[in-house]
Length: 250
Image (cartoon, rainbow, N blue to C red; front, top):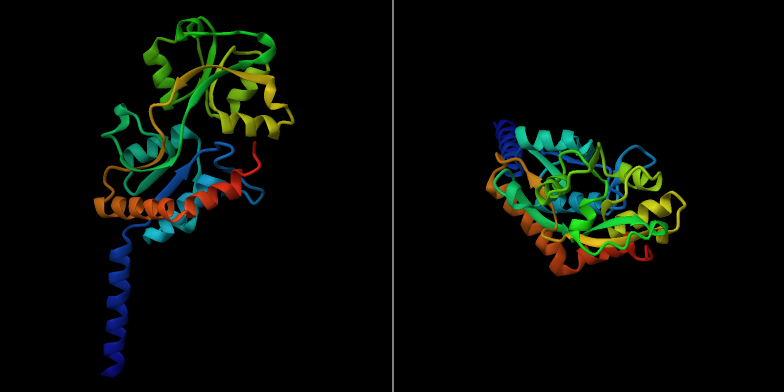
């Protein structure tokens, strides 16, 4: 009898723990150096990967298969838009996306500039001048949507962020949108000096990077994740993690 009671108690404890944790969430991101990238072991690494993993662990929300998945942006965006129990980072929280997802953030600041090659001496002073140039962007991104809204016509679309710098260096486009820490990291990784490119004009600083959760995600899960991130920021753990990855990048 005592053994049976213990078995039932253990079973109920497991059930309660599972219900508390909720369904495991498929957590996705894209190659987006230096924030996240594929490591030598084939797994996702980088500041934002470490941050999101800690947020989920502190919130006691399980990650499906225990690993963050690297997918092309368009694929990840499609999944989080249509599939339950999914999450995608780092996504820009724009007015057009506000009601399509549930949000946790911010994960990192976002200020996007249009960059050109320094030796081209473009010396642009307005968006109107930039619209006369060819600009590379990538599919299903907030930036491509924003460029289109602004009236940019000469867009060359690629499948991912990592291809933009190559397009610029090879002279296939005049301008690319990028965040400073990202383009500098990419250039260093390719053994190019960071001053081979120069900022031309600020393009977008309307929103920071966030985690986007599928709409079916329970509010209690979203709130637990947000609370965990907020606690990391107020405790200083966020800054400590950021410094571990980016101190000395400049």
